[in-house]
Length: 137
Image 1: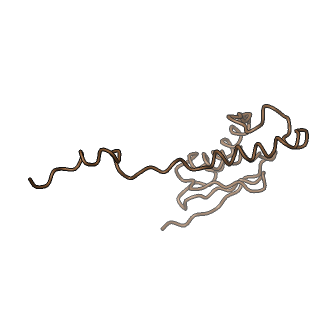
Image 2: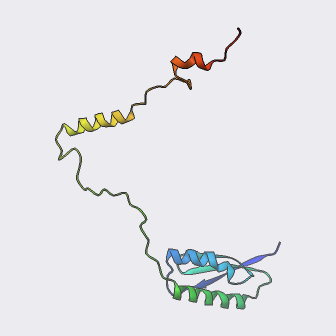
């Protein structure tokens, strides 16, 4: 197993959490000798090198990568796909008459009642004699 070393780069400006996550995800593709990239504190970028890597070349590639990422990164606005807000901002209970709330409770209990039980047979009880095969003469 090869030994690895950690190198660090300090950035001039602090990185947002989205930009830091993108740098960590894509940083390993900068060079085949870079194994991992980690961003800590918003300004410090650490990367892990193989023992056979050229440190100056890897540092130049990482600095160029960070410069391009910070220059071209723009945060996209979050899109709201769905929301759970009421269309009618009215309240139930305070402004309504007292009789509405018991009616609402009764209506909810009617919804919860189970359906009528059904017989476990596939035929009507009056047709059982016709559905049974005849036995004997």
